[in-house]
Amino acid sequence: ALDLSSERPELTSDRYAMLGAKDNLRATRFRQRFPTFRLTGSYNWNLSGDEDFRGIEDLFLKNYRYTVSVSANLPIFNMGTTTTAKRQRIQYLQQMEIYEQSKRQLGLELRRTLLRLQQLRRSIEANEANVVAQEQDFRLQDEAYNFGAGTFLNRQQAQLQLFSARSDLVRARYDYQIQIATLEELLGMPLAEAISQ
Image (cartoon, rainbow, N blue to C red):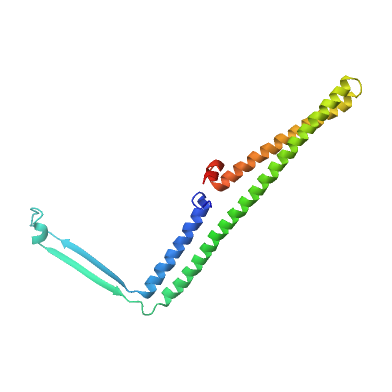
């Protein structure tokens, strides 16, 4: 099976938005249930007006102050966090649905393009058969005209139908190539590379 999520930027974007919402939900639930601790420290050093700085040893010997603080938060009354967790869950479910919808939409576009390719391939085959038939009809009308059994108008009409059949064949081949390009765009890679995977 071909994984298109790495090749399609919009799918990748939707996937990471969903995963980000999931991580936010996990973090909120963690803050809701477990205590948090914070440790901070600082160092302060001052020289008075008549003192000179004589080197690194003065940092530890003169006018220094160390501060260390520890704080702990216990989630006892966590109504705000509970509301936030519910909101985060809704956002996660929305992002997951957006991602799944994007995958379904891409699958639908791929199926539509493949069916259109199949239709165009059959159209090419039918147009090739029509060109062969029109070439044969033109040869018959040309020979009939050359032998005096046919009219110039019949010959011209056969030639017009031949040109029309060739034009239809060229148009069908062109549309087929356009659909291949559309398929490659949907896949996010050349068709040969996708087939080899």
